[in-house]
Length: 209
Image: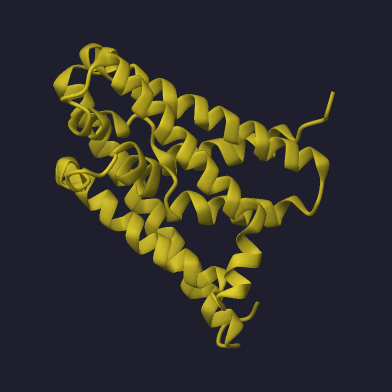
């Protein structure tokens, strides 16, 4: 059995859970798939999770190479991710989840569910930073893999059973969860922006590293 860094696993899982926000996807998922049958909704949830996991995994493995090839620094990606994530948080706080729907003719499981809501800049940057922190340690690499699998399962469960969860929580409960998720997402995005600015200032020698 491959040893796992439990503390690192918990850190990765909690961070991704708050950024991806599976409970917060319930009202968005229901708004985008309201006209679908139960079977179509289940397939849409599976496709959205698959797209998100694929995007996050690709950047986790090849992210540094892609950024290097395009001459994009990690702080730049982190800053842009924070800004985009902040706009999503504002939409959640203002109750404008339906405005994130895709254009007619576009598969909503791909856009905006798969990306940028689930496999968005926030999750991508967070995963790339966690990969940097592994230092090649098998215990931390396995922790990231397990955390990613756990998040994927959580994303699917919350979307697949969004109708049942919404009934249990009630309209007020779903709204409350969405608003809380918006607040947490806004805080995370702001921290990402601050960290990116600090990294820029350190690289320019304005702040000590």
